[in-house]
Image (cartoon, helix red, strand yellow):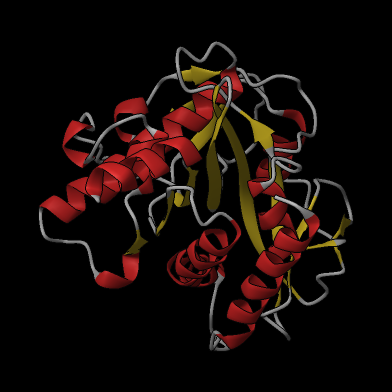
Length: 292
């Protein structure tokens, strides 16, 4: 993605965010729900313009019940959420597929440019990554993850939303105060270009970061497809193509391993996700040739 293409994508995303009606009583989950249902079509259109001969797939899913992390070696902290929004991208390259991810924790604030957050359980998770086990995560409950390095990572940041001007959204590296120097639209475009976020592996992931991202993708995909199969998915909870299937290396949703992923109260757990798949030019050109 060159500079002109990235600029065009940023402009389209910002226009879409500015055009959304943001009620004053919105809280963090409401903002995330709007983003994952409104942005995929805009992203898809911009990417099809930039890459007319690629197979592009973009989708978004809102999942209210989020998995928690229970610290094993840090006492006195509540169990933080793993994140409010996960952005993942897969790109076909000459050597195979490359994957990138950005995990965001949404925070509403009256001063998005210079926001102070308590150095609480969520701050500790993203700044120190203590060893944790999954809670309220369905089949993952009790599984441990030891993310390294034990410090701030480009793969996990805050999404700051200005209470007075909700369309002004920024991402911020974990710090105190949080410095909102990057508009959300720019961060999203940078993730697609692999200039922001943290890469991960899908096939036999060995590092714990890759394992965690795949954990979140799998339970989120299960939450989406299980609810859709049972007829409980509302139209405002899912939008765009079934990009989950591409990111999990499946041909279609029927190949996804379905499990009972409910928590103790019967809710399906997962992380709201925007999935982007940048397929191969050669594969798309060949499919067009065979189709014609």
